Image 1 (tube, helix red, strand yellow):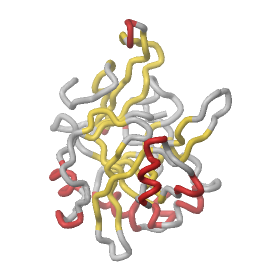
Image 2 (tube, one colour):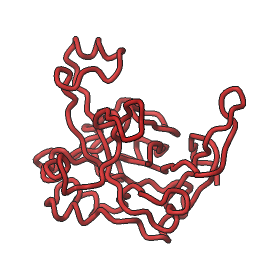
Image 3 (cartoon, one colour):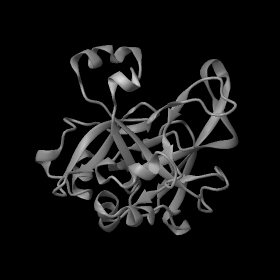
Image 4 (cartoon, helix red, strand yellow):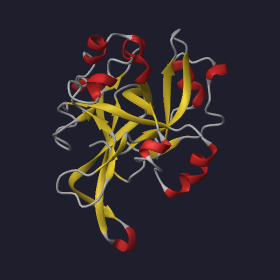
Length: 240
């Protein structure tokens, strides 16, 4: 569920929306991301003990798990039950909450296909965006994060051996889901991401109590969301 999203908002616009000072922007020269998949590099917004916000990079995926009826491990990318282990502990720790900037998110269409490699049909992606006057109004997923422990968690992939050897810090990220609204449900009846749109919601998620943060776990109103298009596994912000 929601294992594909985009972030095509400009770096400057992200700083402005989330009130991040330029001096606390750790992204370098970030480019648009029309398709972000599990284990991909993701922009996140964090807040320190003083409430100062920063822009950082995280990897999407809390850990690798093997779900029922799966013969392979896959990334745990979404959070649902905040009253169960380990999420009940994570949600109480403000230092483990983050915002995940996004411009659209995707669920795979249950029946529509597009040509894949060698002409083999693959599932088409249905892309959802906020309703608004601009093409892709930016928003944020309610995210959680943790430091990746090279010794306990191991390598995320073989190429990480050099990062481990150098002691580099990697942040793992996942985000919250909830019941789908009537826009998403026909495509994906099980869940949709928790989307945050206002400064008040951003502040509550980053610095509010656990109960205040939990109250944000609700579907977006139907009139606030639109189906942008169904097709390719990337959203460059121009399709409609």
